[in-house]
Image 1 (cartoon, rainbow, N blue to C red):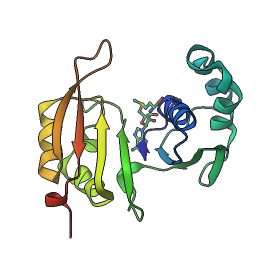
Image 2 (tube, rainbow, N blue to C red; image 1 turned 90 degrees about the vertical axis):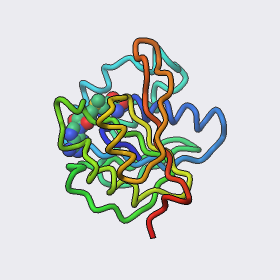
Image 3 (cartoon, rainbow, N blue to C red; image 1 turned 180 degrees about the horizontal axis):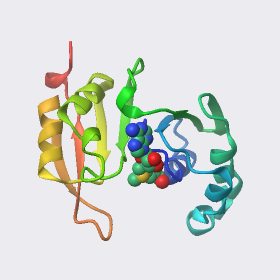
Image 4 (tube, rainbow, N blue to C red; image 1 turned 60 degrees about the horizontal axis):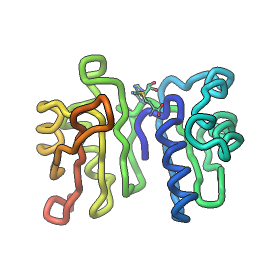
Length: 172
Ligand SMILES: C[S@@+](CC[C@H](N)C(=O)[O-])C[C@H]1O[C@@H](n2cnc3c(N)ncnc32)[C@H](O)[C@@H]1O
């Protein structure tokens, strides 16, 4: 599950991994402000990353919102147009990409309360990851019950956070 579908880059990278490793992935992505289809299709992610998936990348953006669509043999996508802060989750997830705008721009997204909501929709061993490595964010995740570690970031990003839902932290 992803918070912030945006241009679909995270979803696209995940699809590539699903196809290359032959692992089934059911991907749900929440987005409050969908990017216009024409604009998104102009992005040349596929050309840069995996030209063999060009048509599939377009499908990400042309596929309908609010329903599950099989995009490729190993990858299905459910894009949900919604405000994440108002969602009551009914399903459980194994991986969460927390990819909202920064805490400076959207402080309401990075609170202990919001991470508690996410903790409750985690399967045992689930991983929540985000590009933000701020101390306040790390502590909010810990207060919500996650075990949090700092990892080396991608080039240009010193650190990122990985939060794990462990057995001794699981909600009853
Ligand atoms: C950093 S961008 C995400 C980039 C995206 N993951 C990608 O691969 O292109 C943050 C996204 O969060 C979305 N967003 C902001 N507030 C939101 C909210 N309350 N609920 C759902 N999505 C939200 C923004 O519209 C934006 O697309």
